[in-house]
Length: 193
Image (tube, rainbow, N blue to C red; front, top):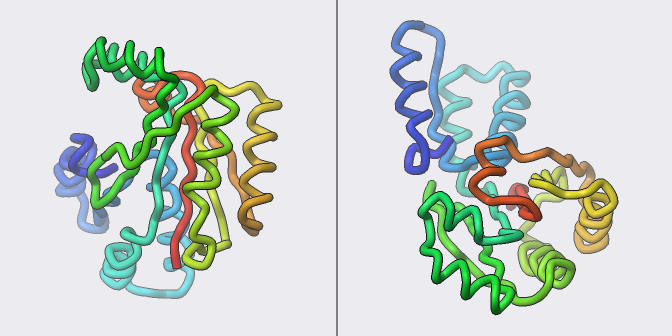
């Protein structure tokens, strides 16, 4: 996980000192953005590349991973102290939904979508996938927190109508991610060319 948002990286570095065959990579991502790098590391390992070369390649491509989320509610950000209660109240009143993007390990609000849940889901998908020419079509991971099955199918359909990815993975967010972002939040993770 990104060293900026988690102590997991420093703990992994410390644990790796007990082994002579473990290399730790700072993904600069979280959630399934890391998963895309793991999938790439696995693919590279089948090419008989040396571990050092795989690490170099991962460091070269990690900036090509797009990791973003749209918040279903800001209530959980307020509960954890990441935003103030007055900001949460304003967001609820005006139906504001922050879009969080990871860039070089930092989480930033990159956009705010306005409207009810159905409207912002559609706007988020269209905005994140708008630069089709730069997107690698091999795979997209849709990470969800607190969604009914029929809504997950609807999101998957909208994603595929926008970009015809070869593979679409749907992954439930971890409990840690879910408790930070709250129900109705989801993210799109994919690689850029």
